[in-house]
Length: 290
Length: 332
Image (spheres, rainbow over the protein chains, first blue to last red):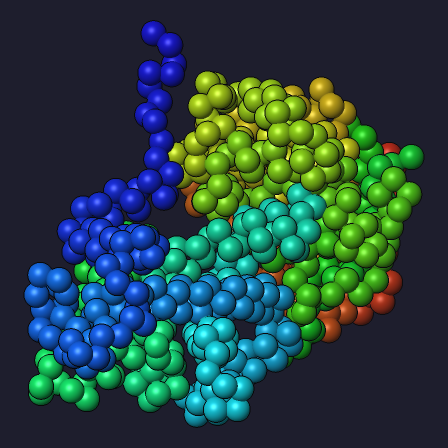
């Protein structure tokens, strides 16, 4: 008998984590739902039954029916189409702004944690100072001064959200830095850049993924808040936030205008949060309750 | 000419509670194919001296305050980080104490093994993998193809230590520093690992600095021995000389406390007390506070420290009052 038969096929830590994630039904529901939403958002231009700005003033607001599954708004625009397009914007804001915050936060946190000492102190004090600034006012001012540009929203939200990410990553890296394998990396003559990019970030990837999956919904919520204030996405474009805010105004006469985007938005947020929780339990089994 | 010549190396740690002189003026050399054992109890500065050579002393608070370490004629202590990077992992490498934490848990063994080759030798991935297979076979791991695709947590402690050794030796370094490579392993594996290092060393003519607190291990592998205590070398010389004619009171006490010298039921001999606080001024002999041969006032009044008496054939010992006394008696 050859020796190979005694060696079990190994699982990587990722495979183990995926296995645990698959067992978590709520997280899998979240995963499936989010996937569907993302898929729909991507193919929206192909499947949307109407144009998002096509008005039909004679039709006006009608409740859901065979032609308009989600009904129409006061200007006679098809709500399903607008929810679909709104999803595109909301998701885009969620993902792009999170990505911006991810890149800044992870690099900032790893560099601070890795270099330590004075560099670390200065970098983290900057984070503390930025944390204490009233960022919502800052974002609102930015919007007022530079106009309501969607890219500005990305940047503005990303600039707020990277702060906790930087803190989380830094605290992880400070711990990892003391581990012998980092010293081993040094002793093998690896450059600092290589150690940070190839070895350290990989080890905090679990935490990064978890936090990212929880940041996306909070960013989407923040965007809807801005839209609610009238500072976010401008008509005729829509985001879920702006749809909800205009739906609220006519909630008593035309409840479906508020209900549909509200339900879709809430379900998506729930799903993202479930998925995030599931990922946390899967990637860091010690933190889970059972 | 020796491959590595260390002269008057001093590494201090600047902390809030004072300056700790972890390594305080040590000198030694290692030649190709030779094994130097550094022995001493915890906190004697064994590891810090090797970390200093590798440029791994955490700074702050640590700092190499003086000394030279000529590696093939170049001073390691004066190199900038990019020069050091070229030497570390290529011409000199290190095996660490705890094999459980020395490998990156998220990367496959194969990738970690070939990384030094990709960086230092600029090999292609394919060539590097071939070498990695050979390296794993060299350290006695079977079924290497599968092992290369495994993660560290699938390996036992002894196997991880083998992987670490393979990794340290894959670029065929001229100098290997082994910092207590067997301390975390059980005795049977320990013996295998020692043989393995010895074997690889002979084949590749590597110089090895072997750090341990286990005198048995030193006796087995070392050609030369440095006995360290409180940041200084108290006695050094060929392994035969130091073990056959231990001269310093500390070396004698150490050898006396080896458990195998005792009958069952007999109380083990131990050196009373703890090593001195290295942040204090320590005039005279550093071992005087625990020395049973203490010559009353002579030990700390002696202002010649550290001065070494040559006992011939490279056997050197710090000449404290009790050593002189001991030598006088031995001559009679």
